[in-house]
Length: 126
Image (cartoon, rainbow, N blue to C red; front, side, top):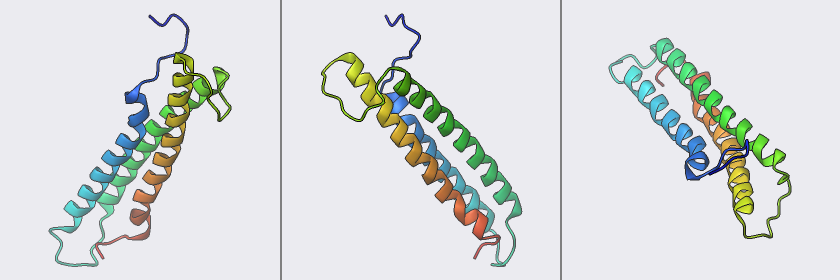
């Protein structure tokens, strides 16, 4: 049992940010498709879908940001803020998972921004 104040990272903490990004991608494109599908007029605005996608985007960015902050804090406070790992131990694997989670969370944060970018550019179903 882990008695120190740090949490134990595992595969779930590692895949949470890309999973949030994938769900954001799916929901955003489904909302846009649903808003544009019944429209015969190509230039009709999709204001409601844009607001919904903005809310989903903010929620995804907050979730990914929380995972990033947690992983970065644990990676830095454990003394593992170097890029090398030359020991085969539980602590070494823990630092590797924390650093990998930091990288995946940063990548997922940027990916969510890029998925939401078309909503900022396009106001209609073109």
